[in-house]
Length: 310
Image (cartoon, rainbow, N blue to C red; front, side, top):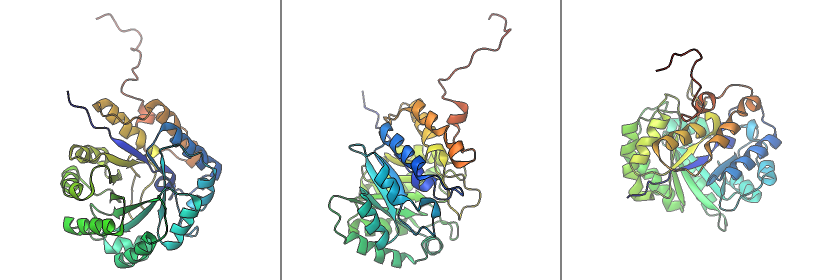
């Protein structure tokens, strides 16, 4: 009997989920969430981003969150870094992995990073040259499945950026559907091309649910051989360049789907649901997650009163 491959969920709520929230989530609450994620056993937790507080005020307390959280053995605590200064701050804060991000779409990179793609890579080369000890380096390819300004991106162009990241010394690669433009067939085709370059243990897929295809894209990528996926509790997050974006794929919805399909994640679904149900009070609005509202498939209801016997 063959063993079902596990699906590894990497939690990004604290960074990608909170970065565009209009209300500042207090540092103590971020630390509480980080500790809860650690207790649940996530392999990776993206804690924050060391960007300018003026650019992303919601994450101005990145160093304080890193300093205040309890770290679990075996969990990698990730910081997104846009430049050399951010990388130096992340290393000083004790990040276990630096996540570098640039877009395939030149227009999106200019809008999001205020740099051309070549300028981004020049900066990443300086980051890669820093003394890092055992701190990992991940290269994220944003808009890998489509740019909201330029449309579809050639697969060869995406794979070229993957190779350039690997040449820099990146330990992992993330293919990001930054504004939710991917479809399952497109995802399967790109994953099949990327896996020989990166390997399943080093490739992450990052999907947004902007057009309702997030979980379908997970299944397509998993069936093509991928095993690592980013997700955000409650489906928080989104890109400012994707009008109507509903955020990242939802952690508890992803875990619930895997549970129904017999795919192990190692995560406690009831505990995730309970944690997610506390998010609206924290961020001041309802979240996009569905399982926290509807309950698990296994959560059956009593029959309506007055039914006659069958």
